[in-house]
Length: 470
Image 1 (cartoon, rainbow, N blue to C red):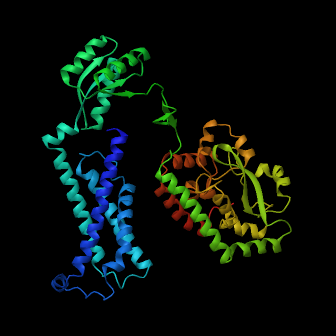
Image 2: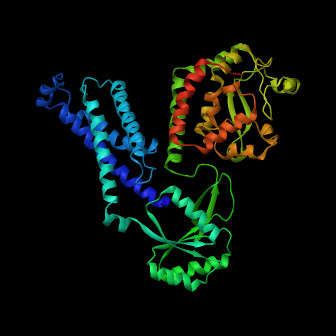
C-alpha cells in the first residue's frame, strides 16, 4: 500500500477512534452514575459535584490524546488485514496507557471527588471493546466480495525478468492485499505493443515499473503509453543503491523530485518538537529565575572564584553552523590556556576531550557538573532556536573539525540538544567516541516526539543520581 493511502487510512481510523474514546467516556459516566447500576454492583454513591459539565475538559482531552497514544504504539501502521495479534497487543497497550493517563490526570488535578471510582475502569473496558469491535467490523467488510473488488487494485509488473522476480518475492513477503499482480511483462524481451495489448486483456488498474537496470528511454515510452491508456504507473525509483537514506517524492517548480534524506522529515511531530522546545525552555527559565535557582548559582560562582559567571564557547549546531553556547563557568578563568597541557589525560578516544577531576575545575564547578546545573543557561540557546531540549550534545567547533570519519558528521543533521540517548544510557561513562556517535545516530534514525518525551523523563533520574559526570 502506498504511503499516501496508509496516511489517509490512518487519519480515518484516528477520527473514528477519537469518537469511540469520546463515546466510551460518556458511556462510562452514564453507567457509573446510574442508580440501578450502583445498586446492582453495590457501588458507592456518586458525589453531588459529579456532573458531566465538570468532566467536559477530560472528555475533550481524550478525543485528542487517545488516538495519539494509539499511534505511539504503532496501532495505525499495520496492514488492514493483518493477524489479530498484530493489532490486539498495541490496542491493549494503547487503551491501558490512555486509562493510566486519565487516572494520573484526575489525581494530579485533585479530581478524585468528582470522578467516581470505577468510572475509569469502565472506560478502559468499554473503549477496548468498542475499538476491537470496530476493527473486526472493518476486517469483515474488507473480506467481502464487494470490498475486494473495490479495494484490490490489479497491476502488471514491468521490468527485466530479474527485477520482476525480485519484486514478486518482496510483494509476497509483505502480503499486501491491496495489490494484485495479474501479469508480468519483460521489458527487455518484448515490444511495447504487447504491453498495451496486455493492458486491454487484463483490464489493469496500473503498471508497477521497476527500472533499476533498464534504459530511461524505454521507461519513458512505457509511461507515455500508459498515459494514453489512462492507467497509473508506479515507478520503483531505486536507481541508486543507498544504505540509510529514506526516499520521498516531492515537487519543485512543477518538476518531480526524489529526495534522499537520513534526518527526520518535516511533519506534525517536528512542529510539536519546536513548540515543546520553545514553551518548555521559556517555562523552565522563568521558574528557575523566580525560585531563584539561576540567580543563586550565579551569585555562588561570583563569590567562589574570580571571573565571569557565564562561559561562552563556539559550538557546532545543525549542519555544523557555529553558534555561541552558554554555560555556568565551572573552571578557572584561564582554563583554555592549560587545555593543551592536559591532552595526555584525555579519557575519550577520538576528537572529544574529557577529563575526570580535571585540575582546571573549581570546587563549586565539580558540584555543578555532577548534577548538570552548569548546563541550565543553554535553555537560552533553546529559546533562541539554536538548540533543542533533546538532541545530540553540541561539540566545540575545533573538535568537529578533527572528525576523522565523515559519517560522524551525520550527528550534525539535527539540532543539538540539552540531553540525548547517551545521557540516559551511559552519560559520561562512555569513553569511546564511536559509541557516543552510535547512540546519537540511533536517536536520529528512530526519532519521534514520544522518544523525546521518554528521554526527557529518563534524564531526570540520571541527573539526580549525578553518576558519570565529568
